[in-house]
Image (cartoon, rainbow, N blue to C red; front, side, top):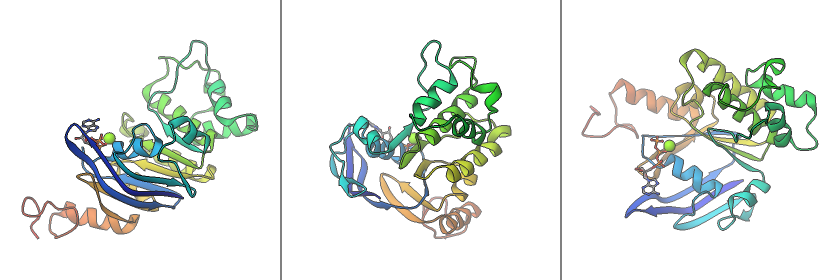
Length: 243
Ligand SMILES: Nc1ncnc2c1ncn2[C@@H]1O[C@H](COP(=O)(O)OP(=O)(O)OP(=O)(O)O)[C@@H](O)[C@H]1O
Ligand SMILES: [Mg+2]
């Protein structure tokens, strides 16, 4: 449903994305790779926050390369920003109602909050302000993505800023999100546990797609590298890989 054809992004005299070709069709796809490999840039290109220097983006058969963010959103794409919008007096329930649209029932709205591990009774009437912790904010943002129920929800490192103790429940949040949403999820993550629940993993390296395959395969290769003894796709051959 999402296809990237020869996508490149050049800025500041650097090739940040180099001729990326991808077909993304599975329900839950994770993007991983070293810092600076171009993951966030790729997600921004997909959402239309930045324009690629060259290449095409096809979404559900339609060329969306020149569409602005709001029109991509109308087509069912959403991007989870780390900080949801804050307006004085705006409550969690208001944000979720806006996200769910006129068809969203109150039972559904409660189920999205439950899916992210927040008790509706305690949170529906909380105001969106600094009294919410960073982790609570992030969960609300994820619940909003579920409520929007778009065809494609994009997340950039949702685990960032989540404490180790809450981390297990974040994984459950994504497992639940996968169950409650009809759409596809594309998520940037460095976390093994999140990568493991993906159908496929895209491994970006130096602005190119180094590997794109089933999660289990890529995880095996990553684990091999960690053990330090191989000629795998991820080892820095000649530097840290003993071959
Ligand atoms: N507009 C820009 N101008 C110049 N350099 C940029 C621009 N956008 C991104 N970069 C550079 O491109 C590289 C890729 O950035 P990007 O944020 O996509 O990396 P990333 O894979 O998301 O890394 P991380 O894991 O650290 O989040 C980095 O070196 C970054 O500094
Ligand atoms: Mg990034």
